[in-house]
Image (cartoon, rainbow, N blue to C red; front, side, top):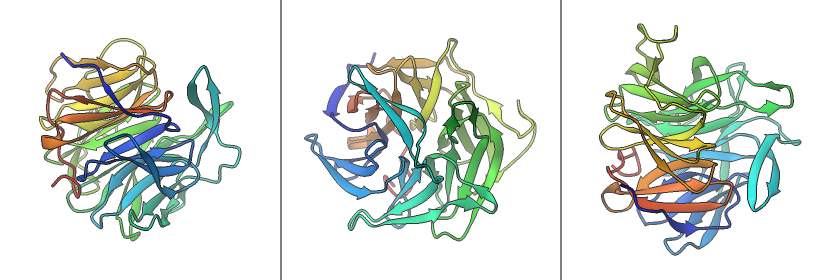
Length: 308
């Protein structure tokens, strides 16, 4: 049984991409504010960098810098104390991967394309042990159309980027198994979680799956909901932030019964683990602008270049 969440910070402008730092602070992006921000243990919010556009997923790379998926921005609607994204921003110019120096706040644009494929709405990111990173591209939505997008693999020095999986239906949350032999990708509109066997860094193993690209469906929960970002616990369970219902769906690669931890915001978008022994979950409640924390039943999986 999970306890009620504790509010760490409020009045954030659509927070996502939490990263629990070793010093006890939490990095979050504020998508509607266009910033990478830092939340102190007492809840004070300070701006680390102004990225503009729509900073989304974030992760610490092998150089100690923060790598940010920038989706290019949204239009926004605020009513009854809740903030919601409303399609592609009027000043949208494309998506990008950015590198932020946490000491100086300098923002570098690392990638805008993979060969001739433009990045549309990069969303979530995870580093493997070799220093490369996987990221999803959710794409952008317009009144009568939305982008077809996929999943990419890149090197942090700007030397290599490629689209590895295409197409997917709104790929969002992304993560690696403890052995880094499986890549997990959550699709937002379908509420599905896919697993892909890997043969090496940035390489799919192929083989038979539920889809021609080798994707294997992870057994989920019944009902209508949307999936957002994800994190893994140390046992390999996949904890997926869940929209509309509002909470964290816990799925097992072993076929165990799915679980669900409800949250008081229908736009529960991200989860990460921090604190002593990675036993605390930090969760973004985006429409209400809150970062909350709670003890978690299993410790989180350590992240490369952050917890190891």
